Length: 257
Image (cartoon, rainbow, N blue to C red; front, side, top):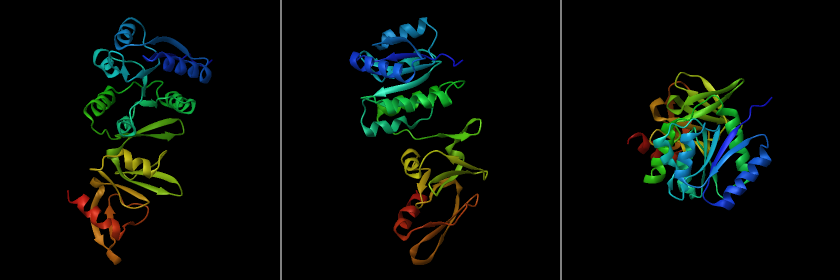
């Protein structure tokens, strides 16, 4: 028998709250929505006096404050999905790894994706409060938060891969592979284009259409014909890394920072 999943919805706009509640009931009728709250104070009081649900859907901007404040006062034992009306620039802050978000107005497809992420990853894993703090700082201070980890699909679950342990990301035949500093390959479920947006540009750079490189893996660059560069990294990649003449100047400037 499938384990019952309990949920909390914190949303101060009643029509939005009702819409999310109805979509959840349609997508996961076996889930139990244990409470719907409309303010930070009400949500805090409920969590202080009741067992925490399996998953919480939290509006960032509640009527009496930011829902981030919950995590300063209570140790949360739930998976968290934030709902937000923030613009596209601010959404980059949500690339921290143990958190998901829904952009208002919420659509069934995006809600289903968040639910699947919960079902595949969160059971048995606690939320990382450091990710919450990083997200809160990024939103409230206007700073960028970069991806620090990746979930690598395995036969029996997922492997957590720290991006600092990745020497390079390589794309071939629409498959992206992360090669660790130890030389181990891991297929990751994302594209180089998406990774380029999510990784810290001080640490990672796009060398060409096939490679994103970790600066700590680079040990030498060599001049090649027609103003191109060949980049040498440890461990040795599956193919030669060539930087075009058009990219060469910016690449050298990035290395020389």
